[in-house]
Amino acid sequence: MDFLNHIDWTNHDGVNLGMINDFLRNQFYDRVLSRYVKDQDCTDIGFGTGLLSIMALKHGARHIRAFESDVNRYHLGCEIIKRLGLQDRIELVNKRYTRDIESTPVTFTETVNGNLWWEGLWNSLPSDNSRVFLPSTYFLELWAIPIPERFAQGLCRPCSEPRGFNPAVDIDQKFIHVVNTMRGNIMNVTEVNLTPGIVTFPRQQETDWGWIPYMRAVKAGQVVASYHAQHWHPEQRHFELTVSTQSWKDQCVLIVPRMGMKQDNDTLYLDDGHWGPGEDPIILVRPDRDLVVQHNIRSGQISYTLKD
Image (cartoon, rainbow, N blue to C red):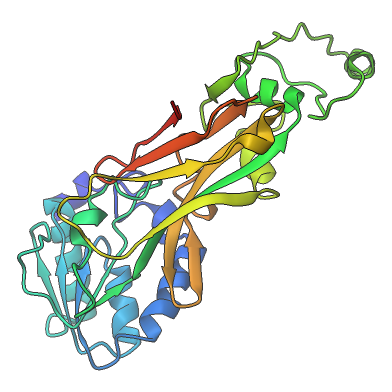
């Protein structure tokens, strides 16, 4: 049982409590598996505690071959399987799943991170529809909304400054000063000069509105570009999107990538769960050219440029 000394239930992939207690994630997979695994031989990529495999057995899966590359989590999984008496139903393999392994009729996985691709999901995707892969569809949507310049400045201000009254609308600054004076917080707020073009800011920066205010703001916006991926392609390196900025030339616009998974009528946005907001939100300040966005399928990194 020495392996338990090397399991971090707070941080390690596949076992951290934030992940295995993520009820939106768990309910999504429970619904998806319920429709596809009955009487099927299945593959589970990334066993962890075995939560998805146990769900699959609940819904009638015949047998599960599971892969867990981490040796300590492999021993944890073996012990869980033994204590549940499921040795004849789950075969746990201590290796990383690769594309040359013979597939079963149904494969399921949750090897994603907050930016979707970094944990190697891309190389697990099927090349065609000959087998069921769950979830079947992975996506990125670019959500956008024009925002007041005061809100844009607040997202980019140093997080070390004290928080005060900041309604995040274009309003008489004397009024804001009076309210802050009345509450005993006379602030010398740093004025942020927003240069036209692409402005980045940390996704977890503390602001006057908390540390993820831009997620609340952008959900009032709309999807301006997106892609959906279902199949592995050997030559694919990234996905590229182009966003017209013509209607924003005199505005500040918040752009936030939202990623997730779909199966049939079920959709799970990663930023609604334990993964937290997607990386790489930006503000477009009075753009004069279209925006080009690339999402790297190996690192998950999202990069932005203005079109030449």
